Length: 230
Image 1 (cartoon, rainbow, N blue to C red):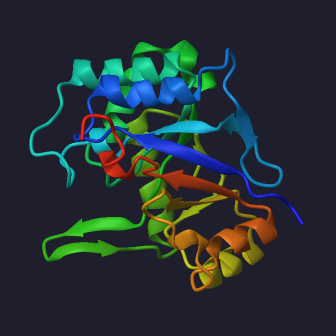
Image 2 (cartoon, rainbow, N blue to C red):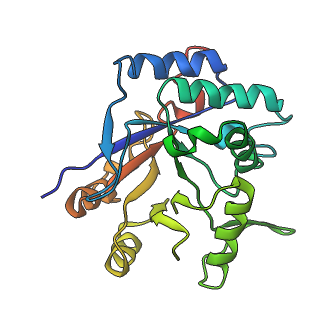
Image 3 (cartoon, helix red, strand yellow):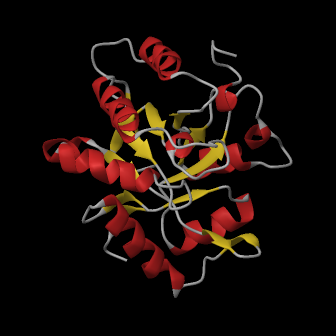
């Protein structure tokens, strides 16, 4: 039986100052070289602590005004300096993909160092938030993310991507998907205040352990609740 790899993504929350969030990351990553873990059974090695961009995109549910671009670019600079080179974003994180594109345009030599993950499925309709995961929409969403990010390939997401991951999924759907194509990782919220992934009823952590699939934990600081500024 394979061991389960758990990789945490620290999100920049408006509830946390940039100094505060990277103080936490620096403490965790204080070794000279970042701790690397395999993303799934045969996946690439990625830093144990990644950087999520949900909180820096605008508009999004947790920002009422946009963070100035220079501040957000500086945030990505600092993430890179600390070895947080596994970056997670999404097409529903406001303009987060666009900000990453601007950073990569300013730092083209660093693209090879960044393991870039993005997501699709959530769409905003006039009637509210909805989901779309049909086969016809997949290449459309992928191309849109590639264009916004300004990259030729997405590391984690039809030949345009290197690895497939799932987010917010049930064990049953996870098993169905993995039977069609090996899944590299599953992303779920996981912190001391959000442990549903461990519950026997949910059974997702055990399923990942059984199949040798990595767990990418988002919001390990509980969206700022565990930050020192609260």
